[in-house]
Amino acid sequence: MNRPPPAPGGGGRLLEGVKTGMFFDNWLLGIIFGFITTVALLAIGYPFARMWDKYEDPKPAAGSHGCDHGH
Image (tube, rainbow, N blue to C red; front, top):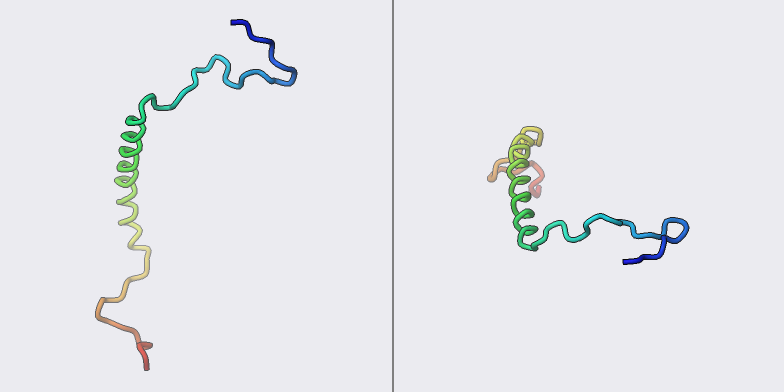
């Protein structure tokens, strides 16, 4: 296949010789990859979220209220 030479200034194909295409050849592989990475990130982040509770202000008890409850 004869191609004309690239134009001056780099007008040739950007990915010459590189196999182009989808990252995943099958859309189902992409969905599975996304699901697995989502579950993995949630599993990694959960312990950090639980440890963060000690840095937050304590929450008031469910039945208690402050002095500014309407009087």
